[in-house]
Each structure stands twice: as C-alpha cells, then as structure tokens.
Image (tube, rainbow, N blue to C red; front, side, top):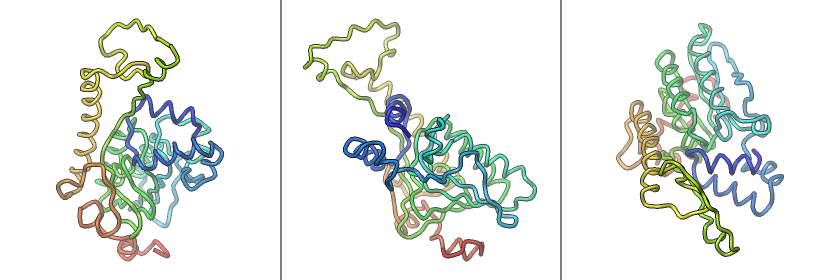
Length: 272
C-alpha cells in the first residue's frame, strides 16, 4: 500500500485495525521510508489472495484472509498483500453454494483495516457458517475487522502466541490549524451544511462536530458488537479494543482453543 493511499484511507474511512499495527506502519514510513515497509515484517503477506482463490483438501475448503483489509484496493495494494473485502464476501458465498465443500477453514493473518464492506462480508461468513461447519484459526493475528470475520465461524482457534480481539472502531482527524497559523496561512472555507467541514484539517474540531463524528463511530462499533455477540458469549469488558493471547483469549470467550485442538478435531492441519 502506498503512503498516499494509506493516508487517504486513514483520513476518510472509519478504521477497524489494531492501532499498534497502524502506529508501527506509520512510524516505519516516517523513519525508513515506503520501500523499507514493503520489505519488512510489518507489510501484509505478499501471498495474500488477489482473486480470492481458496484451496481444497478433499471436501474441506481453506479460505485465506491475509493482510490489511480494504474496500476497492488498487493493483498496488493487491500486489503487496492487502485483502479485498469484496473477495472475502465472494469466497464465502461461493463456498456456501458449492456442493463439493462439506466444511470450511478460514485462515486469518490480519490486523484488520477499513470497515467499509466489513459488515456485508461478515454476514456472508455468518451465512456460510450456518450452512456448513466453518472454523477460523490464526497463528499470527486476528484483530479488529479480521476478528469480526473470524467470530462469525462456529469456532475460533489460535496458537499460544497469536493475538486476537481488538474489538472496536476509530477515526483519525488531523488538526493542522496551529501549524498553518505559524506559517501565516489562513484557509477561508465557504460551506453549506453545518457538518460539511467536520474534521477538516485546517481548523479545530468543535464540540458539536466531535459529537456528530463520535456518533458515526459508535454506530459502527455497535454493529461490530452485535455481530460478535450473536455468535460468541464473551466475558463482560472484553470488547473494549484490547487484544488477547492464548489462554487469556480462551478464558474471555474470544477463542475456543489452540490450533492443535482444531487439528485434532479435524485431523487435517499438519504441524499444528
């Protein structure tokens, strides 16, 4: 993902990505440059699906969800491993309709991403799980929008060191008004509609604008909570944006067991 593209999405779309991953990406951009990010462990996996192909093992389908989740990613995003949310939805719909597929594994390695398209893809995964035994697992990270997806399966499994959760949503709005003032720059904006410039970078955010934008984030958060709660019985307080590892995730209801439990149950994941 290019720096310009990443910054545009951060400034214009609600985000369901574990914030520590976003912070690490931005820090790497700032200190080492874009090329360093694309060659680092912070970059999404380069083998993430572009066309949504999934593997078949007998009658079991493996659906991969890897990298930052985006709506309408461009070719550059896809070449560097971002995950197209519409491909996730399409894979779920194809797997649900394919009579050859008797059960599904959703293999997730993603910190989340933009929320655009996530509710729709999440509902497709929920319908898939209703139609056929569907299990999600990760040996890395299944956070935020990616956990929204994983939680729709009949079971969630993880390695001991993997991280799951980060159930929450946020938006970021830069306030550069003091910097503009320092350089003697004044932006005269003509607007129609009191919220038309809510979050504009060149002015402080008013309390009324903040409340309006907070309401938008809260509505998406409520959708997230409803989707997860419909499938899982989580301990109170476990949907406040935190991530969990191993036994802690299992104790709080975010996961059902470690990957070896799933391997033993299904008998198909080697080396788990």
